[in-house]
Length: 242
Image (cartoon, rainbow, N blue to C red):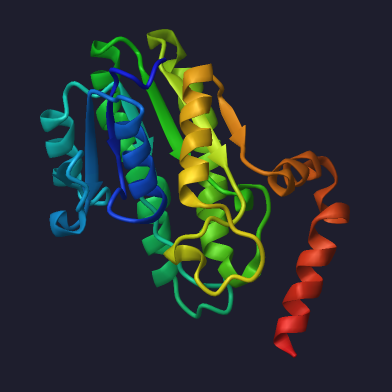
């Protein structure tokens, strides 16, 4: 599909990658860009339409589907990210909160907007995933699990929605220079650069985007993950315990 003339909704569009995606859509000639956010005051771009949207709220999701009934492109970017291990967290609170947004909230958006996209010609859904869709880093173990679940869900809805000609694109990336990656050492992608790659992939009709070389190598290592991925993950984990 073409970005120019499209009608897009971006969740989590008030900052970081979501804000960059909304801006890039507007600059590429999208006819209308809805910017979903929990707090409308946080959406400051004059070229987008702020939409009250907490994707964990069934009422917000239903209201968005009614108000944004002309959407042809849904970008599921909203995310809950916490520094929470699996065993060491001590409770299920962080795991539940992250799963509610990253998996259930995103699934709710897909369910609500699938009929909208069917009516508007098929369009596309973009789910923002992560390099940690492919492995678990224990310090953020619960977050990794949500992204693995979202990867599986993305592959499932792609099959379900193919008959209505809806493109489903899963985007996996290493660190992006947003608030979520504050404190992370090493190279980070500029949000605007990632946004450009995502929209390029939509226009090209791709079903998967592996943004960087590390992400591509990580996915290629999956058949031998216990040998190629997890020894280094465990080394880092043990070093942090000292």
